[in-house]
Image (cartoon, rainbow, N blue to C red; front, side, top):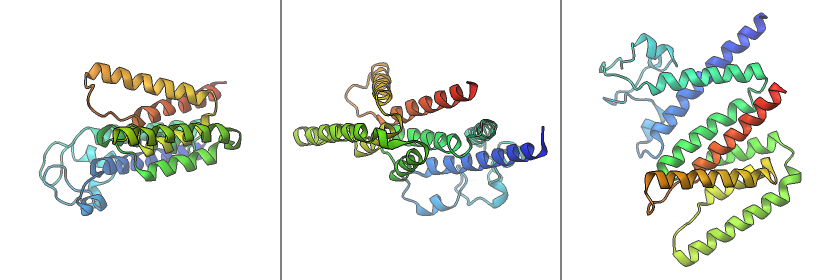
Length: 239
């Protein structure tokens, strides 16, 4: 293996692990009223501010034996697991030659799905990022008319439901998200995605038996979208 490839894999793994650490931090602190906690990482147990050597992805967890250095309590395995998985994923993206297309969108979709499932809210920053990624990675002009029609139909449903039921049946964030995804997939793939996402949500509602509660739809949209992207990328790479 050429030395340049080894170096590329190494930096891809480091970048993936650092990004994973950042995403876990953002997810854990999303919606927190404590602004300081959002800027600086603190111990999950005692709240003490962490030092730089506590924040090295993968290595800090291993050298601290999975325990916090301040109060010696067990750290969640999610940190090590997420950092290892994303590091390996970025190495795979370099191998496939898609680091800055596939490597950036999948973590963003996963973070959006987790936040929407927990808070039933789609962060505007992630919605904007997905829109920019779509614009940069596809010839969207041919899908513009169809995406506009889908967005107009969803907005009509949104305002109609809001007028007669006085509550939102579908969030504006979901509509923006679907508009971006429709720009990327076009017809009929976008309809397949909406159908699959809605079917998965219905199955979740039936399985949980929480018929009267509100359920996040955006999480199922982005997870299905991520599956579409991975299928296209791996199918194209194998071909």
